Figure (cartoon, rainbow, N blue to C red):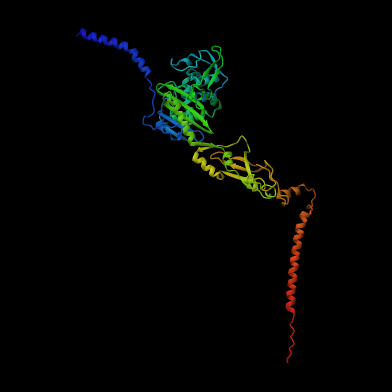
Length: 496
């Protein structure tokens, strides 16, 4: 049955209207595909002057983690083991593998498949057939987040992207990642390309052991060398935390650097490291807002720095140095009783300084602040002292008095020298020390003991005293025996 004219007309107008609104619908869908997440409106207000009070609800990111590097301790986290899309933070592992197995001076020729990426994907850009050194390729990949550069690196190392991706997964598993599966080298969205905040922290921790990686990520910009197809040009780091400038309110002075990322399904991501006073932290935020990733990581870092402390044995020692009471020295006779001198010197005591026996072999203690305070209060439990000389005058300034061995938790011991901070003269009439006697004997070529009144007179006087005492005792004994042998005579009596 034919459709009535009125209904056909209405259907026609509906089709026209739908056709006209399709572009608008498509544009609206594209613009509104990603909505910046916001913080929990019920979360308590954050006060920057009290960073240690940070709570998970004061972070925008859907997943995040804060890890301390020395002990790998997780200080704060939320859904850190929930699988999410990493976006370009994937390139951290790509860069690490290139640095470990590639040659930075080798040139890579860009192939057409390297540039087979979506039109809206970030590029350095490099051109087809352009030959680029691996070093420049990595800077373009990490600073500008060039996806074609990541493809070229994957092809250079693995032959093709799929093979390199399998290699990435094997490497991630060896590093300790348990929930990571990568299908490409750049992080462009694929449903089977995922990881977790915890695994990204593990990957970042391994990458930070590579000094070239650290050099790349902390560079605010880099000058790409000229090639046959491009002139020399400057690229800037997409991580605004390390770009110093008056107009950059997000500059963070403690940032070591990191890697940003964004796709619509992944949201804004950031993996970053920071160091302050010897404490190194790693922060990972996943599916956060464009501006939230800067504030999120800053809050996490400040929280970690408020909880952790890093000190050296030298710092602990100098808070409570060894003070020795030196024998063979009279501070009063030597003029050390002056009240203007330090009390230790007035009392004839000596403070010892500390320095490592091997300057390249030092130790650092990094832990939560209560644990550091316990070490400060009980430093002797972590150390052992072996004295190298007798603790008596004379002592020269800078003389090594002994060795202090520090036993760090889980590491090899570190040995320090204990050094005299000042000289102490010997008392003029002080008896010779054992070391002086041994030195005199060693320096005397005669096989007979050396003769001197200071050596002979004391034993002679002692012998005379003993003889005099024996003589007195003998005389007293003779008198007693004589008195017992005498027979009393009877007295005469007279009577009147």
